[in-house]
Image 1 (tube, rainbow, N blue to C red):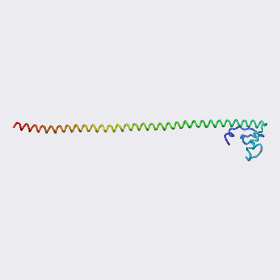
Image 2 (cartoon, rainbow, N blue to C red):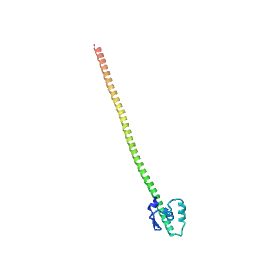
Image 3 (tube, helix red, strand yellow):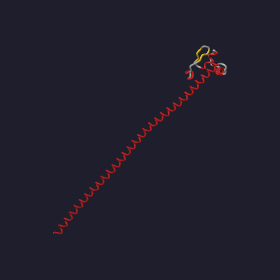
Image 4 (tube, helix red, strand yellow):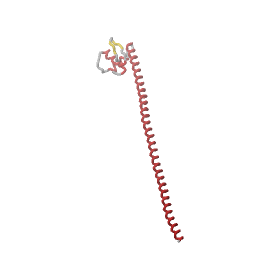
Length: 158
């Protein structure tokens, strides 16, 4: 049974309560098969002199309009909910990506600082080696100079 018939309150034909407006022709004709149903429904709907037909069709049209409006509202509501959920999911993914980018920047900065620190330490060690070499060369030159001056002073005095 479709949504229109499920919520329809019903009406009486020949003392029988009918809850489905599409079965009017079946009850009035006593037939159970659906062959020629649209023709019978059309013929039933054009019998404008019957107040039952008029009120039934008006009720059916109101229920149909209500269900159409409810269907449109459901589609709009579902669409809005879907947009909200997708936007929320996109924001969560974006936040995760931004955190990853932030961590990557921090890691890059750390590695850069470490690289620069190593270069600076290497340069400092190189400067220390040069100073040590200069001190060693100066001592070596001083020892040689002292020996030469000592020899010269010994040779000049004798």
